Image 1 (cartoon, rainbow, N blue to C red):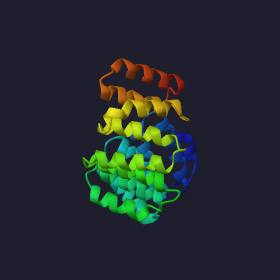
Image 2 (tube, rainbow, N blue to C red):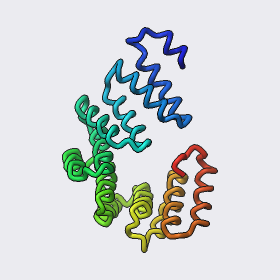
Image 3 (tube, one colour):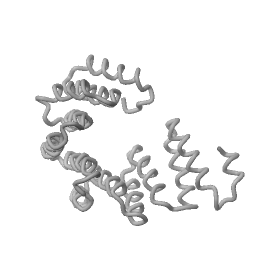
Length: 219
């Protein structure tokens, strides 16, 4: 990658830095990936590059940096993707009022609606309103009974925010039985087992998820 970067004139090195950032991220060198996005942005400040850097800053817990990057992406190219990224980080950073306002503005009740609801429920959860957030997800399940990914959303949400725990495992079992993405759903149920105090079952699900997808880092 260094040789590929060196072969290009400085003004044309952005794509090469982005390529190396992808390699570094794939090998879990998030600091290195951010450094390469820094260089790419200095050459070619595009919204998608700010969004990628925001993602990695969020992964490293740098919420203020993630918010700043997402704001810059919104300035350069306002879009649902930028709005959802910004709202998610705002909610995590304790700025729920601004996040919810932004989500209302970008909720088209169409193609983006499911994504908006998932982020809005998270924002509510981070604000200590997990019960409200769960109601949003469950209402979406009623709207779209054929979307099995929403069962996983409900399972994951209940486990993360410790709400709706009475029926949590039943929901998670349904999600596993109907899963199109088994590793993700097994990961969610593993967290639900942890929340329920059953570490043996959690380990079983985590092991099963990793056998299918060894690179699923969160598991």
